[in-house]
Image 1 (cartoon, one colour):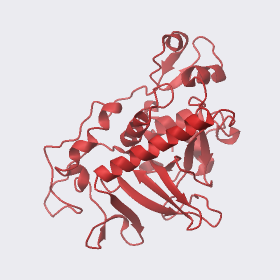
Image 2: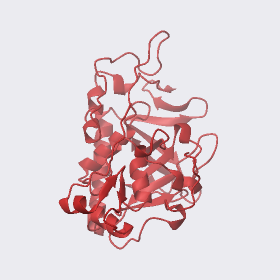
Image 3: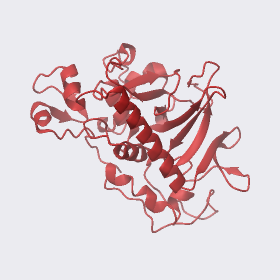
Length: 310
């Protein structure tokens, strides 16, 4: 079980002396306004050239990891759901405890990501039980979800510091930090929106699966307790407006670092659908200096909120 941590570890002495870090939020023990708090945490904004360079680094890092994992592709099958494509033409769902993350060839790769966010490590002493589907009688091997650790690894590889990104094993930690104005280098884009290379696309999952773009103000970070919002995020590595598709790379997708293409709507946008399979809820985009606040007032954490967690 993961412990509750404060992912916003402000390391600069001047920030630490003026701020009380409580559960990832920037609280004003020194009565600092939120805008000043965000400025202290974020520092100077990226120039357009710097922002473009960071996007290139993110995409290059994601592509390199995908190749290290054997270039697995996944797609959504109407009957099987999310499935991994095998060389023999089959597309199969990958059970927990199976697939590449628990193979002797790839398991150690996951343990390159965990140190960025946690002391947890994958159990690589139990590998090669099943390629996709668990045989009858074989007990599943439980592993912690690692998609957020993978995203955090990419941002570390791209040169982001803890003052510019929330390195966490929970996607909702950095999503809520952007929403609350604590990561001023980013803007939050509720679906529908036109994706760009370097965007993070995020969806709600598990008990949070029904969350809609109108309820982004309800997203709860991990420190809030066991009812925190379960999410998944992938990085956009390419867009093709002519084909109306976006190409994503993400971790812990069919138990590997995988690539998938998603369809865009007639206007080239990522959209959300409540059923049968909720789509992408929001995007996070790296900004350059002068790009605006990036926190739509309608989804600010100060918006009227339902006391129930999603």
